[in-house]
Length: 323
Figure 1 (cartoon, rainbow, N blue to C red):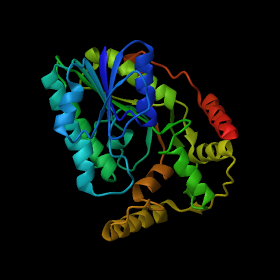
Figure 2: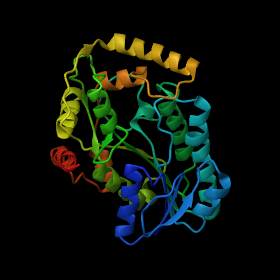
Figure 3: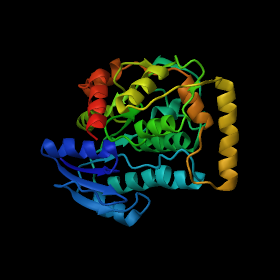
Figure 4: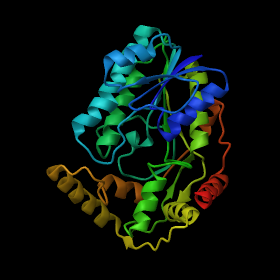
């Protein structure tokens, strides 16, 4: 197939493009900065630019849309512009270009209202119950994407949960930076079970969704390794892999959530662009269980994770030993 991948400079996006190239697909990438990837046609720009989007999508059979604003803080209008309006622009251009399948990369946070999620499937995206600009805008965008699904252009939403891997700056490096600074507490007991997804498995699932898209239009799927672990264990394994000392102190959940809300207000009112030490969404994520039933996902996509968490953490340890 001829496939457009947006956001290909991200850890996951690059791996998805490499997977497609390796099996013989023709790959075009669209992202804000140039990638060093060879064998792809490149367009540099934003999904908010209708002109560059139309150029990138012309002649494509399929789209895998990963590009998004994923910052912890920021102006609401910026999240809407990229995540909602950018997705709308891409969907419209894809339909005009005759694209025959569209995979939208979403997030489990689109259906997380702060309560524990225990063995659930992909509940409907609900922007009215989400926490934070990112989750709310992604929920709005997923609703747009799935509503645009037709027989001619089926759309599938894939929600990878907490993707980790070598080179990960979104989760792994943030954890390590905070641990080094002594700013990584445990929220509550640290015993909440959460799912994670090793990056290779996430990329494989996205490619599988592309292949199965014609039969799954309008559906959403959460993907994970299916190996829930406690928050304490996951943080400990990440810090141990990098050789970073971590001596956690415990902060009560309610205190952390309330404090995160106050910090968010201060950051918004002062227009600070650095990363806050805590947000209410972050406190909720670190103190509530969220792991998912993977049976429907694996059956529908014909996919199972190939890299276990044990193997993944060994790869991470090897990376830091050699860096």
